[in-house]
Amino acid sequence: MIVTTSGIVLSSIRYSDSSVIARIYTNDIGLRAFMVRTGKGRAALPKLGLLQPLTLVELSFINDDRRGLKSVRTIEREIALSAIPFDTEKTCIALFMAEVIVHSIGEEERNQELFLFLKNAVLLLDQTKESTSNFHLKFMLEFSSFLGFYPQGRAQSHRFFDLVEGEFCPSEPIHPHMLSGTLVTALSSLLAIRIDEHASVKLANAHRRALLQKLLDYYRLHLHGMKEITSHKVLEEVLS
Image 1 (cartoon, rainbow, N blue to C red):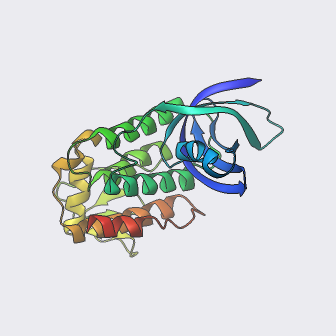
Image 2 (tube, rainbow, N blue to C red):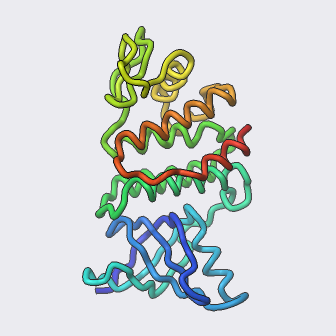
């Protein structure tokens, strides 16, 4: 059966001189690997341009459950992004978001609510005119709700956040996986806003980097076997 669906490109690797394997999160069948024939040399450039992280595409393919790697029949840009491909900060955030997504959901089945959230997050990142220095942090928090470990409770007078239990707590946990002090305040502030209000929270660069490291720890604690995220190192340099 031929399926035509919307998709969000997450990653791609060269398979041969004229083809690429791309991991694309689709609206109809979730995250899958696709073989995309690009052609060679200069002729390959338009297709390769479509396969940059977080590109929004429309693709068609034969959906044969017996084959893990699906061959793309057609692929084209669904919505042209005006800033992510050209703005260094947004490009780095997009690379980071794509890596977090692909390492978090595996071969996820169809989830239209998640697809819509991811698509809207891409468009918001692309279109926002404000600072995007907090965007990746707020994205990780909102994305965690789809993964089943959104932070619980409210900070209020609680001085700690337990990364293992995923909740604010009044006393220091017996393990080292926690937030305290300024980072609890920063986390609470980010949880209190909508994702489109990401720029309203003011964080020092040092606190932003520290909170990012803690959120990556949070993901690893709740997604057993999650591969190491590496793109945040470049992101930290760009946002410093």
